Image (cartoon, rainbow, N blue to C red):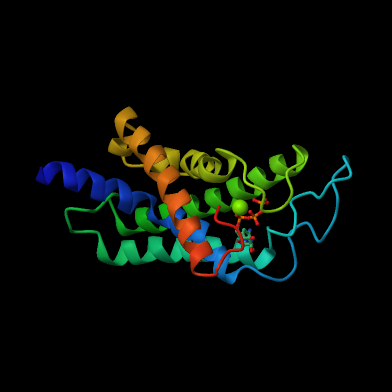
Length: 179
Ligand code: CTP
Ligand code: MG
């Protein structure tokens, strides 16, 4: 039992920078959109008003900050995920950069598919950012995270966390829509 809860704890500590990167823009993202209002060749917005420069930068900074905090507090404990403190910081940066790039790419696909800004898209909204975050951190990721059952847990947990936190953000008045 102890081992099982340590495993879950390890997976959640690993992915924490990505979760922060994904949620901070909801609060700090406003101002100029990354596409500056420009359209793609199909006449639809490149990314849309929901992807701002501030949100993008804030997401990467927030996730990297979590990685730095982990670098300070986790080494020398049973929850150390990497061989050294730098590993935590680098992973925080890669996970949050991947999250924001994946989120941006997700919006790019949504616009191409004709979804309006804020309109929900099953899986693109909840899991695409995770896929890109994992792809960027992959060469450095702790081996146990990449075991199939642990990856499956990570995707399932992220899906439910995303749905639940967006519902909460909507109830708290932070988001106009509950997704
Ligand atoms: N946000 C931001 N900049 C980003 C990502 C998000 O400012 N790079 C902010 C926006 O206020 C956005 C909110 O976080 O409305 C929620 O993000 P998300 O659900 O990803 O955007 P949507 O508004 O749903 O737009 P889209 O349809 O493109 O996903
Ligand atoms: Mg959305």
